[in-house]
Amino acid sequence: MTSLFEELQPAAAAEVQTTRVDIKINGEYKAAQIEPRLLLAHLIRNGFRLTGTHTGCDTTNCGACTVLMDGAPVKSCTVFAVQANGHEVTTVEGLATASELHPIQEGFKDEHGLQCGFCTPGMMMSAKALLDENLNPTEDEVRWALSGNLCRCTGYQNIVKAVLWAAAKMRGEAPPTFGAPADDSADEIADDSAEQPEERSDEAAIADDSAGGEG
Image (tube, rainbow, N blue to C red; front, side):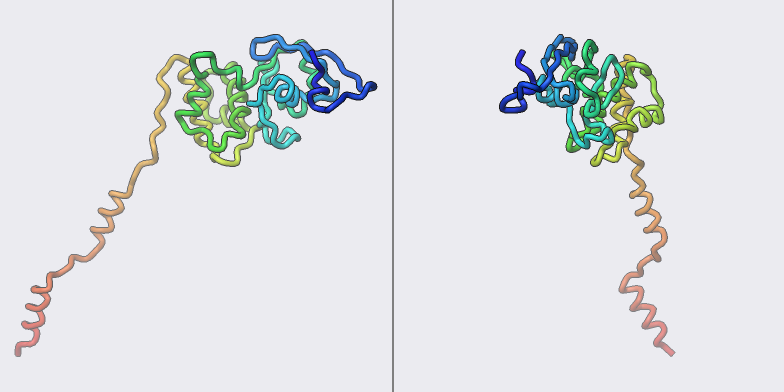
């Protein structure tokens, strides 16, 4: 195949060394002739055109580029593509089938586990790595598994709920229903009413004034 270097640059210099990599990605075998310095994230996005893998920080901090390599989560912005040679890589595009979403994707949808969506692919892949090993995680275990992924929108609570939802469905159980916080407004209104002194009618006030004026 044409080298990825040629796709990214108008023309490759003759002295640039390239090497062939063979990667099984989302169940399909792919080959590419690439520069050894090429990052896995760039091969996935620009070479294989799988743009669900996002790049945010290029320093492994944000986790948006997380993919699975042989089932383990890796941050593809700091993995060389040549390191994936002969390995199996799974990206977010590999979660759903042709006819239905993966339970993790359903969980993020039903529990509103995303807003802008930039971090979501990496979150889902980290969640998949967790659930592949532990289908009954605690909330703390979910939070630890996602600790390498940053979200600037949601505050994480709904993301955790989404993973627990997916875990239940993958166990064959009914997904949990996370209730909203109890609404105490009615009780507060009742308490406020009880604290207020009883209002007196205008007729009663006039009668009292008249009685006080006699004598």
